[in-house]
Image (cartoon, rainbow over all chains, first blue to last red; front, side):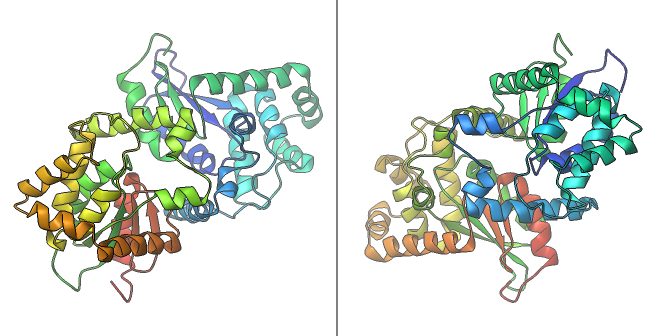
Amino acid sequence: MSDPTAPSLDFWYEFASTYSYPAAMRCDAMAEAASVRLRWRPFLLGPIFSAQGWLTSPFNLFPAKGRYMWRDLARTCAQRGLPYRQPHPFPQNSLFSARLALAVPEDLRADFSRAVYLAEFAEGKLISDEKVLRDILATLDLSAPDLLEKANSETIRENLRGETEIARKLGLFGAPTFVAADGELFWGDDRLEQALAWAQSHQGATG
Amino acid sequence: MSDPTAPSLDFWYEFASTYSYPAAMRCDAMAEAASVRLRWRPFLLGPIFSAQGWLTSPFNLFPAKGRYMWRDLARTCAQRGLPYRQPHPFPQNSLFSARLALAVPEDLRADFSRAVYLAEFAEGKLISDEKVLRDILATLDLSAPDLLEKANSETIRENLRGETEIARKLGLFGAPTFVAADGELFWGDDRLEQALAWAQSHQGATG
């Protein structure tokens, strides 16, 4: 979706977030079909969770909710024909993959991100493992040494901190969250359809 | 839906729960269309929340999530043409209305419950106010004195405690939750369609 006059929608995602996986796997195709420009914006939930006293995922803190989430996620993936394997450990450390997602060329960010999600939620891999990330970069014909160095740079670190702070100020408290040009929030993979409809009908000044 | 051989689905709801309102307003019609027998089962979330250290609604404990929920609820109601007014205070004390829902004749439980939700989420009334509940009973041609006395009986108190304990043992952590005959859980108004489809295709021994 390269038409700059098309309505836009920001897709805020976190690599450790479970429902971000099915969202990442369908959002580009659905945005394309809806003629909405989708902007992929990785961020970290950790700082947002820890600010409210959570030192791990709420799905670990609240076991009944966690059990339900794993079951619901498995059902969602099965229904959509998405490969799925519960990641261990959970949550995974998503810091470096998030930095890398900001370091890769913007037009490859979605491809890179989907590959990270597949490694984590379909292939049983650790996304904190540099080898896993190198393999993904190689598949995309990207230079792993250059991008690993860039991902470790202060510029990218600051970029990710800034994005996470923007997310917090927008009112994000979970992922995935879709944010329309007028600031309207839609939380969860299951709100993607509504978010796209909103973006189409409420094209803001920045849209 | 009175066919005893039809697949069944339990609708677990809590009168203080926000998303139980839109669910309550649509679930009977949708179950009827799906030829699924729906069983209305009021319970209390308070004991389940307090067991994990929450002394009020998570929407109050986590303000960003709460702000989002009110907005999302308003959007959901608007989309469905449901009247909506944010209740104050929130959460309301739902204990007596839950007892009353168990005290009214079973074939009027859904009508009574929808009237309670409308009072709370559409008419700005306090469902802990006995006058509000008396008016609802009168509208249903039920004897308020008899039912208020029955709702205060040890039998009904024990019934509600028992239902809440069953809910906890089933793994419920929020409302509304739909539970199929085989124990499969579907949490949230937005999972009603999936729950009905599951009930149709996984009719259990008790279904």
